[in-house]
Image 1 (cartoon, rainbow, N blue to C red):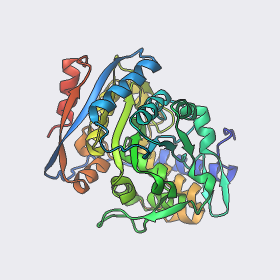
Image 2: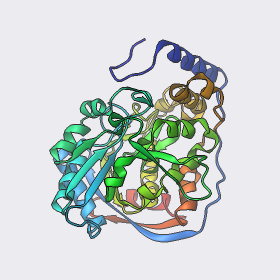
Image 3: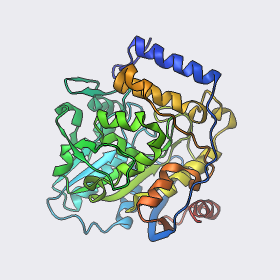
Length: 399
């Protein structure tokens, strides 16, 4: 069996997961078209976006990040000397778009420093295939993942500090609780470093996810979680979509989130979260909002648009297994997190063949717990987004 230096699959677990995969291939799960209840219209929210050409350089992308951020917020929330956390998406050592665009992190860190931030910290923890933290043991390294995918260099180029919670061990976490009515049975274990932070800037990516369907802004919350919280998240899988949205309501995150910004000049449209088919649309986007829900509405619409650009043969059973294999793959994650006994307790989960943003269950749950469906306006800063494309995106996010 072959693995990279950060891989943690031993032969026994690999064989078990392979057996699960074979069983699912013979008896695939049936996806559903969801009839989800849509709540009332909520507050008006703005999403700012700018267009780039397919061939955009890192410098051009960094300039776009700065432009979009300055349009989205006036940074009045940032006082001189404050500490700001940049939360990227670093699930693996694979480069952008499997992880956050490094030059975008550079640009954001520099802008925060320019606006008066005393400290800018870049923090995340890798996925369970690469990192395993337990009370007495650590295997794998998010630091190494960031070295290989370029995020570490991007953060350092922007003058940011880097922090990797697993390096401080099991006790470097505290318990925070989501909103009442949550599907979480326990509080969520999050890095104590959050207590030092005044503000959070979230910098996710737009991507397919082989277990959840997509990974956008809301899904990035898993990168904060200690591995016992991740175990509950994956094992109690009947509510995994709901718990994804609900985890974003913990006070240490919800009360400090100021900006969500995505560089989406490339989109991973199959398999995910680490590999798959990558689209590079002729008109590429960078977009941001102060609302994570509004941000994810556009991000999901952009994913669906890029999904339509993906060749049909790339969406086959084996190349894009979310609709047929995600319950089995999720059980494999539980096996990695908790062993055979916990894997045997894994709840069944649904897969959703969502063709619109209104059929995606994580975003639907966010509508309910964040005050309704935002009435989103799209603000094209460049004036270069083709009329047809902008109308198409606007229609996707409008009831």
